[in-house]
Length: 128
Image (tube, rainbow, N blue to C red; front, side, top):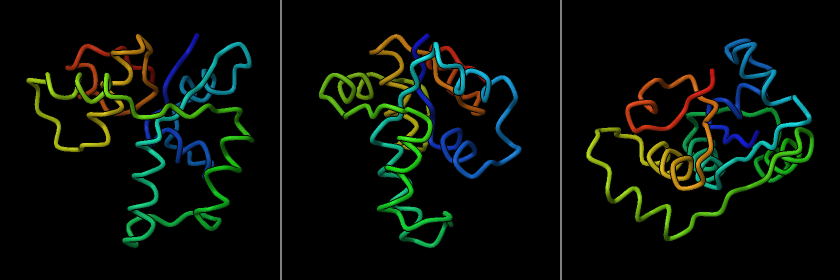
């Protein structure tokens, strides 16, 4: 199964945070699953660490590449098709990073590993 991790799921995984559900962790560590991370999540982490709203245990330049490799995650680039999908959303979700991740899940037909139940309102399958 191919899945996309949202930013919180990625951070919970990397920081060994118990907020990551057992089901989500099992999906992520299952070697038969292909796990992807949106470049939007990397962008969000960069912004939040720079603003002092997020503390990570390594410098940003080391943190993301280390964890991508450690958990065998692939990056999803931002494509015009993803942005076009965002432009069609009627539902409210104030977080622009989440809106892009939702659009990527829909365009790529992949479930999203997230604790945010709002994602389901956009028609994307949620794993948590």
